[in-house]
Image 1 (cartoon, rainbow, N blue to C red):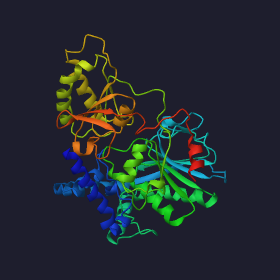
Image 2 (cartoon, helix red, strand yellow; image 1 turned 180 degrees about the horizontal axis):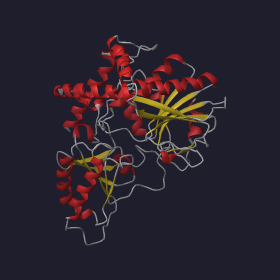
Image 3 (cartoon, one colour; image 1 turned 30 degrees about the vertical axis):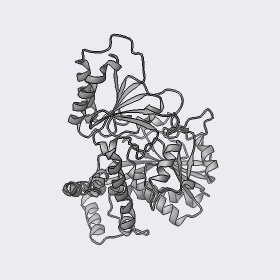
Image 4 (cartoon, helix red, strand yellow; image 1 turned 180 degrees about the vertical axis):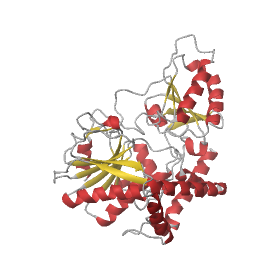
Length: 446
């Protein structure tokens, strides 16, 4: 498969980026351009394409850089917490939160580890709020950080940023203060430090996505607090082309995953020491409430809507007999208010409504689904035993090729459409009758 060779070539180029330009990388370790993911539109995705030779993206990257720097200037962070009276915390968990993740009494439920803030003893939570709204009450072991945009004192803020940029000012660890994302990194790091000062912290745990601020505070802790173990948990599945997970300076000391083939990808392709990877039964994915069949799954990032609709029509004309009229569309869970997603759903429903040839017979197999774009939901679906028809936007980055994903049977339908089946369940999402809690994992990891 030609894509295998292309992926190998790109992966080696990205690996060299973190070694050949190590000094530059260390000064900009929390810069958004180093978030080299293929599934979300942003400067990291553009920079990944630039690395592999798309020089035409240089003007776009410069424009996005200017926009990100402007947003950095007007961004502030508010911190909500009750007085932290406990001085016996052993663990810090860094995660994300939505308002609906809190009960009316202030208890937090972490969707990434299926953990309640009250059922994880001796643990304090640092949460990045993904919404503007904040709960009225939060538990005493929670620090909630909320992003706010403010145009007050904008000239002073711009002048300060300009000075930092022109004079290349750095913090005590040599990181440029003018980097986009510096404020986010600093607010998280400062709150971690505040807790460390008063507690004998053993582990700092994060639902790990290799985001720049995570790389930043891991690097800081690994360098300055040798006795504290930084631990990352890959709460979902690795992306189809997981360049952001390459091991480098700033990666956590230990990594937890929940599938032996994911562990192989990390150690064989992404430079992780296999002894620093722990494989467990999944914390996030339970045996109940599986994702529905007879459904279309949308990604986090839409990309080219026109390309999706063209390929959907091609695919749907061929396989509509595998679905019935109740075919539904499932949006990405945090994109329910996204206008591009809402428009795409409307367009897809329109195409489905005009399809006259649905099977009049009862569908013999309920194991068919359609996934669109770059999305880890593909792995979750095939682990459920479904046959997945995958419409890709950019096949080199989107598809689950044998170069990384041994154990997945793949059939090419056309340049943009692929079909997957899993050889054996549990290769990528390992479930078990005995489900450990996050607290048990934290106790065992040391």
